[in-house]
Amino acid sequence: MAQIDDLPPLRDVIRRHGLSAKKSLGQNFLLDLNLTARIARAGGALQGATVLEVGPGPGGLTRALLAEGARRVIAIERDDRAIAALEEIAARYPGRVEIVPGDALEFDARAHLNGERARVIANLPYNIATALLIGWLTKPWPPWYDALVLMFQREVALRIVAASGSKTYGRLSVLANWRCETKMLFDVAPSAFVPPPKVTSSVVRLIPRERPLACDAGALQKLTAAAFGQRRKMLRQSLKTLGVDTNALLAEAAIEPTARAEEIPVEGFVALANIFAGQTKGRM
Image (cartoon, rainbow, N blue to C red; front, side):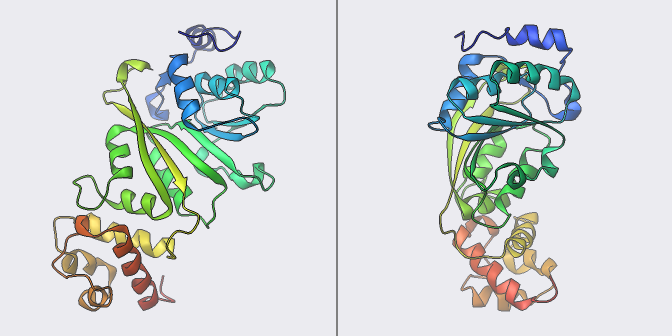
């Protein structure tokens, strides 16, 4: 294992601070500093960059981000036990680590960025990973980040990058590819974690589109939730839960009423969502 700094080995850090992983917090710690360095490098050149990290735990990825040249790392950590470990890293890299105790789902990034854009590089806690991503994707555009490099359970990662026609294509695929270019980078075996999860993980990169198709995010979320909530049904049936004339909605979007959700590309869902928003204006 490469030595990236003169801080103690992560196993020693975990032992000294009593950082046994908590399932309730979705924790699985990465101890291989070669691997954390690979994840950090997947975020591109970090010199001068501000990086947001969610769930740093004992700080393996935090250390890699700093060693790769990140000017500042904003580390959001809900587990009070990890704060002392992160403070040791902050002391080693004065002025370059901002520790934010609290829940990432409630974190307002813009308040910490002074108008600059950040890069998000994180081994996301499994239990909030999808909710975090959807929140980042559906806020007003352009976003406060210039790239997302995130680790998910592989089945979630496959849904993020899936194209229409794929068995893994779904609501998350539409939301992600509507506003970002997505790419699966590499897998991470369960043995890389402590404790080892029961599934393989994958690192995904999402780059915000400069000009995504114009669409109301709320309407798109409702439309895709209805369509994929009953994905085996034809759209003329699954979209009835929206409370509108389904046949008229599909006809205006030039989509066959017998089509199923997995057959409709992102552009088709955007068209449907825009029509739906117009039909329900004042009611949403």
